[in-house]
Image 1 (cartoon, rainbow, N blue to C red):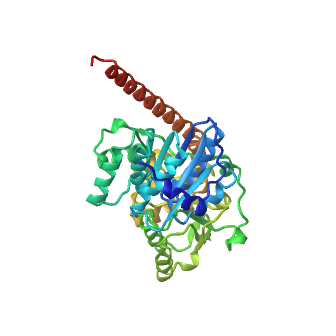
Image 2 (image 1 turned 90 degrees about the vertical axis):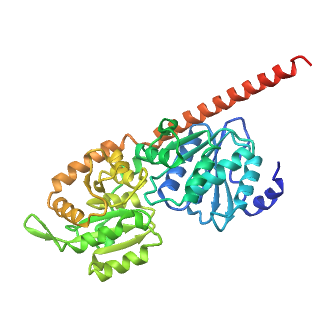
Image 3 (image 1 turned 45 degrees about the vertical axis):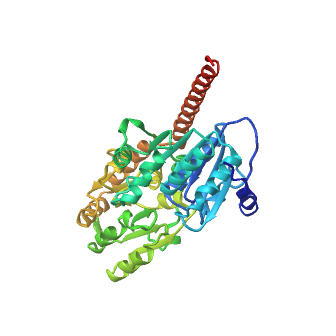
Length: 412
């Protein structure tokens, strides 16, 4: 079945970027969109690393917006956007079949639920057999029966499932009803150097004083990040004792999301509005991390957080929720508190504000632990999996050809 009728339209509205036809293997990633989220930022770094290691690399997005495409333009990474308005638009299946039939990738690698669902099925219908899917989160909320069934159905079209942490692997095996041994683990990675080498921003440029105790959060403003709990913890605290003087407590919030307005209203209503700065999306996150005294991650669930890896690579002390998917990353290099416990967060903030030497030691330990999670290591792990899938696909094809040949040469 061919879907070439679709290509003329997409080539006009969503042209291919920097496509060079040659003999190198091609991996095409499929993702919901390239918004500014952890999975999306990881994918952009992964694609650059795979390109540097001799693969042709492409990415297909299902919907808008795609602000991170600015980070791949001119790099040699192929880009196609389906441009649909809704992630559950059934036409996405046909969009993807047409695009994949045209591009003929050696490997299709899908990320996030809708891209997993449509992407895996489309790849198989387009004649591609080397299909890999990465699970990026434990998805802490209860999934609907329809979503669980869709995940299980689409997983049957995938040759290899990968999880970004052991905790995600356990949850994925449970949701998909597959043996945990069938799921590989490839932790996320980042480019460590920019965060290690960054210099702090002048505090006065952010309206901060030199002696302020500055907290920082980086992430989407959604319920699962636990920011409402953090704000309630801050409302329990006034200025903090630091030696013989009072220290102002300040919080920098970096990121956007649907809950931003509600969180700002909560801060104002609880009387801590002047202590919180809402910085939105920033392109100087490495420098901001170097400016703060403590990185806080009060999430109710995670996967393998890119923001946390960046804070650790910057050598920041970290206060995190005591969740398996987080402690796998930090090991003993962070202070842990129960998720959702505002009293425990407040107590930990007070203790860390009063102990700069402990913060310094935690930051040094975090930087050392972060060294295990480079984007180069993650890229090499995925390329080995791709090679294994291609070898397996070739072996299956050869066996099928031999069986057909034997059948054709049998007695008539």
